[in-house]
Every structure is written in C-alpha cells, then in structure tokens.
Length: 327
Image (cartoon, rainbow, N blue to C red; front, side):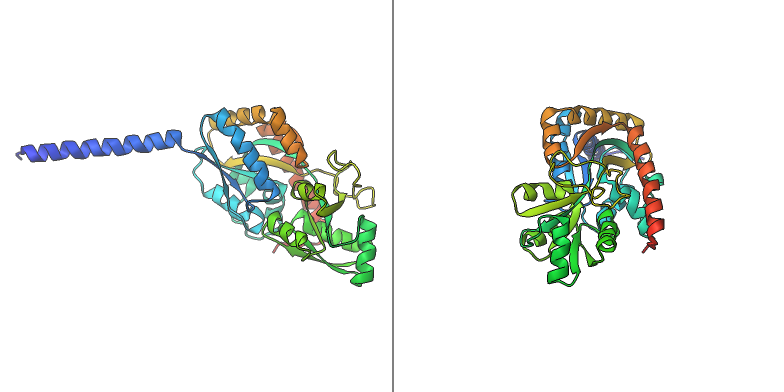
C-alpha cells in the first residue's frame, strides 16, 4: 500500500490532535475541583458548614473544593450520587448522622448501603438537635409551649422537621407522648424551607439541629426552648436539655463527617484527612463552627467509622423500641 504526502500529513495531524486531547483531559483531571456533596439546600446549617470547610480545604489540598447541593429525601439523593461516583477521590459527601446511620434503617430501599458503599474519611464535630418555637408563638419555654397548645389549639399542633423518618420526627412523637399532645410532624426538604415557614409564622414550632436555629435564635426571631444531649450547650447556656425536662434516651450526640465511595485509594483518604485535621485546628474555623452550635473535634478515619457504627446500633434499638416500620 502506498502512502501519499497528504495521507501522511493527515495521520500526523490526527495523532497530534489525539495527543492534545489526551493531554487536556489529563490536565483537567490533575487540576479539577473536588466535589463536596451536601444533601440539603443552600442556606441551611449543613450547607453553611460545608462552605466554611471547603473554603479552607482548597488551600490545604492545592485545588478547588466545590460544594454541590443535592437536596431531597433527607440526604438520600446525595448519598445515591456518592455511591454512583468514581472512587477516585474527586467526589466526597459531607453528612451528619441522619443520612448515614438512620435513613438506611427507616427506608426500605434507600439506594445505598452505608457499610458497603461508603468509607469514612474524617469527622470534625458533634451537635445536638433542639426544639424551637416561632416568633409569633408567645411561649418562651417547653411548658409554656405545651400550655399554649392546650389552650389555643386543644393540644394539636404542627411541628416542622428537616426530613422524614429522622431524629426530629422521633422526637416529635416523644414530646407528644410526654405531654399528651396531638402533634403532627411536617417534613421539609431541609432546614432552610422549614426556617422560612417558622419565620413567616406558618408553623408554630420546629425541631432541627442547633446549627439550623442558632442564628435566628440570637437575632430574636425564633426561640430555642430545649436541646438534646447530656449537657447544656455553650452557645445556649440558658436553654435546658430534654433530659432536665424528663425526656431521656437521646443523650448520645449526633456527628458530622465526610465520606467517600468505597474503594477510594487510601492515599487520598489519608491526604484529605490530614488536610481536615489542619483546617479544623484553625482558630477562625473552630470559632465559626462553634458559633453555629457545633462541638468541634477532629476524628480520624477510624474514629469516625467507630462512632458511625456505634450510633447506628443505638438507633437500631430506638427504632425497634418505637415500633417504627421501614417505609
């Protein structure tokens, strides 16, 4: 077969073009952004936490860290996206206990198995949930809220929660039983829309994490009247715990952590964990997260994995005792 000069030049051009495309793809992979998935919409507590960390992590890792909100189903959509992601260290999931430890036990087909599909990377804080009342509600304590409901609403009320089948939903049931109230949990797609309805006095109360409520509480637009956990929160020293009010069984504190797809190389996990340790140790980061209502404390990959497993077992017992059936 004879090769003409045009054929040879064409082949050279095609080879050069292919080489350029491969080089461009490699460069993009090397300089691309790490995607940090968040299972709740912008404006909520988890989103604010993720953006605080991402801003500092980019400097430690030498590459952008971009927060991507995949809101819906209590973080379920984001967890499914993590499972589907390539285990190359470029996609991570910042989540609290609900999506990782609780949701798989209360949803029949969540689309992921935390133990098989994910690997812990690093933890950075614990937090507590709280009951808050809207500004249009005259109550300034749990007892006043209960009295107000029984007087104005005959014991009936709607309590907003950030996600269905979550710690807040179970707490709604416990509060209703404790005070002989007819409370209805109203699930939202995250804390931001729930807060919007609370601020607009569309609902009289909500149960969510302290980071969800702390800013509006300090502004006097809502009032946090009780918190979970074994001790009062440093950011809310005047607010009693549910244990003080006789509601026990919720003393173990939920956690925040970062997870990666299973089979993600250990070298990347170690690198990201080291970066997280440095970021969490920064005074401005600790101050910012503490102001959000978190108890800041770095957890290694193994420490986070151990905490997640223990928390999962705690909730397995609570869910069984409540008689709740997976939906």
